[in-house]
Image 1 (cartoon, rainbow, N blue to C red):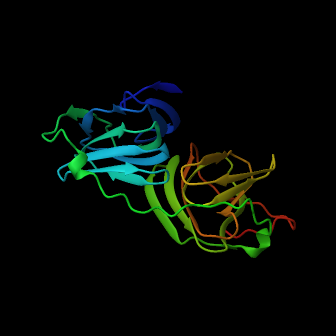
Image 2: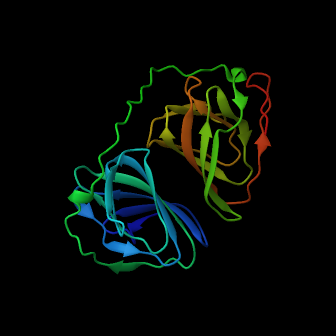
Length: 249
């Protein structure tokens, strides 16, 4: 669903929504900013998907232009705004907490440039067109599991995979897995239909309910990603074939 939103003038596409938790993607045109705002009970996490997303916060004063794959968390009662200063920006928003309230306001310091961070050097992410098809060479296991938000029917996680580590072949009976790359390159393999999705920071793909899928770095490299799992009851169904390797929960 596309609509104007609480993050106007951005447009929004709702991905998943249950009481107390929603996930959506947004697009801001160049030179547009939201109002200054805060939320008394809700936490907002943003992930830049494309372009550069300006985030400004007040008390403490800080500003940053997020690159694809970079995230920021706005806790309750923090005054902030979002913008697209030099190029269009696409971003993911995870909203958690009830009730969802929006309190618009103003800040004393209009010129935010003095508070702009010195952008860290971002190492170039290269993909050499190589995707390792030897699934049996990978071992299941995470290096990182961060729970951003969860309910009984929807959850948002940040997962990290080390060298030659994977999320092995499996499916879910009710829920979709929607992946957003933070550090890559990473790959999501699917069956029914067969497909290989190579994701760079900010890229996304989805494995629908009942569809077997496998996740790792493209050539055994470490990777980090956000996954939205919903809407429905979570379960894990191993997908076991001699050709695809024996998965482990």
